[in-house]
Image (cartoon, rainbow, N blue to C red; front, side, top):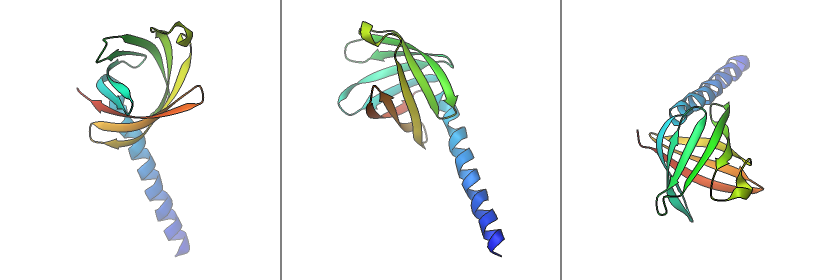
Length: 122
């Protein structure tokens, strides 16, 4: 009987993990609104391999290359931005919570962690 409970527990955990992973698919491409406390709202257009960010207030644009490491983890490498010292640098990003068309995640850049929220617009 103990083996049955362990088997069921492992089955439920696997289903939970797989469902979380597959939910990130809809955040891989499309148009999004990125919000983070203390930073300006930013519109994002993302394909499988590129991301363009337009800061709502200033219309400044940031471009980068996307490399997906798993369904919910990717790296963003700066290819164009107003800060030349950022060019070629990489941000590690993890999506960890999904609720409908909104996801929460964290980004790690040069030892700093930033929590964020993304809303899928289309």
